[in-house]
Image (tube, rainbow, N blue to C red; front, top):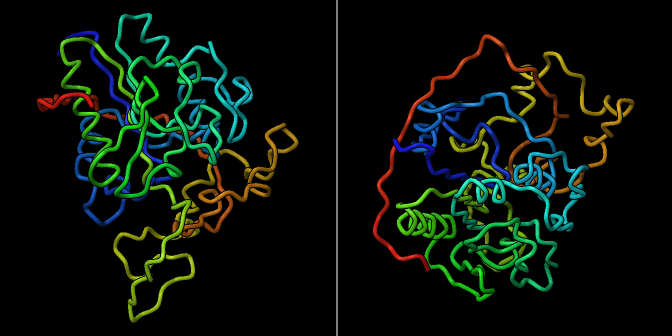
Length: 292
C-alpha cells in the first residue's frame, strides 16, 4: 500500500453501538462493517465528548472540545478559519471531500439552502446539506455541490451517498485524498407522512420497536452492569463542572426515543489496559463512475 495512504471516514447518525453483529447483535446485517472492525483497529470502549449532534461533529472535525470551538449546541456554525481535518490534510497535500450531512453551517431549517463556502470546514470538494433530514427523505436525496447548485441523487439515501463516495474515489484514485462521508441513517424522521403503520397482529411496544424482532437490541438496563467501572454517574459530575446532562437533555436520541429502548442514565467506562486490537489492511477497487 502506498504511503501515506488516502483516508475515508464514514459517519452514521444516532446509531446505537449494539446494532452491529461485531458488538453482539444477532442479526447479520452489517457484514462489511463487522469485517473492517475485526481486521482493523477497533476501539471498543470509545465514547463521544458530546451527546448532541452539532457539538459532537465539531469535536470530530477539530479535535477540540465543543466549548473550545463555540459549537456547544445545535444551530451554531463552526467558526471560519478554525483548524479542521480538512485544513490539516490540505496542508499535507491531500485533496479533501465531504459528502452527506454537515450540520456545522448554521443554516436555518426553514431556509434549507446550501452551506456558504466559508462555513464548510475547509473541504475542497463538496456534496452536502447542512440539515439533510430536512432536505431529503429515504428516496429523495437533495444536496448542494461546491458551487451551491442543488444535486438530486437517485435511490435509497444511504446507498446514494455511498455511490457518490465511490465516484469520488474513482475520480481521485491517482492522488492522496481525505473523504468524509456522513450518512443520515439511523437518524429519526423529522417529518411525517400519511402512510398507515403496519398491523403486526401482536401489538407494538410504545417506543416503536417490536418486542420479538431480532433487529431490536436489548434495553440498556439489561447491559448497564458493563458500564459501572471507574467513573461516576453523569448526574454526579455537576460539582466537577460537567453539568447534569442526563437530567436536562430531552432531544430525541439521548433518552432513547424512536425505538432504541434507552431507559437508564448513562455511565462511562475506563478502557481496559489489557485489551488490544489487531491491525490489518483492506484494499478496495473503485468503480469507474464520474463525479456528479
